[in-house]
Image (cartoon, rainbow, N blue to C red; front, side, top):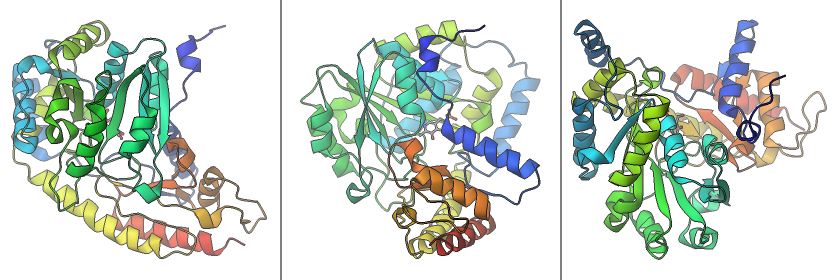
Length: 400
Ligand code: PLP
């Protein structure tokens, strides 16, 4: 029999992937399911990006590239960071991988030893604690309640830091809450971090182009320049350019860290897909109209869905600052009974009730480390969102 390594038994299969798979299964069985689990844009990759990929194939760009990507892609990434954030990175400070996810994973692999601690503010993207565990580290979860806007406070950060802290993970705008840090909030966190030089920042900015706030988007390396030398920015084309299946992400940070990541990548993947690199180069350096249009569509959906859900007795719904998720609270469902007489004791019970009774697929808040909440994706049509809100409202009314 196969006995997996300890690192495999320490972690779980991504609960979002599992929830999406369950929704697909039920649909295949003929159930009428409103699927609000998707973690990816519902748009197609823009046409000029697809055309660039076809042209790359025809031009024979079908071979290995260097581990850190093509010079054209690295130049496009550097220009993008400069244009949007005012950040200058040298060529040797850019790493390229098969998605933001592997870049994060390999960054942890490159930096954690047994016992290294990583501060993960909750609600968190489901993968962070497992990525830390898989790489021998210890996740230190810090709860960030809705009353703090689901955001880490300087006091909570200070209290979580120990001599063993290696990283703070920041994800702004956040999956699952859509909460984003303002420049002033980043400066306040920065003031704490400047007192603790052992702590580096893993800034996952994958949703930074789905941005609704009137304040310009910023990130910790820009808001607190003194931290740039110990920050790894992680980004990619998946969310901003509807390119989840192309598997292309990147990081920018200090050259020795980037070199360590690249050394590991040289033994893991050799390089990301050459065709996807050509597509990503086109996405980053071409017309940015798609990004604006997609953002406007998400904003319209957000405004509609938040207004609907916040009006449902028993639910709360904070307005997201970015990304394409809502993280409604369901305090009014806990302790109630379903029409079948089942007691709802947790957000997991609630989400199962939504699926069974009204066919809405969502992900329970416990998966993200803060209950009682659930995550809804709005990367789906307004008609689907309307149907989802109608059904959730009906399901809440049916509880006794
Ligand atoms: N970070 C967050 C917070 C995400 O939600 C995701 C995707 O769901 C990623 C990173 C990784 O995206 P990708 O690997 O497609 O670049």
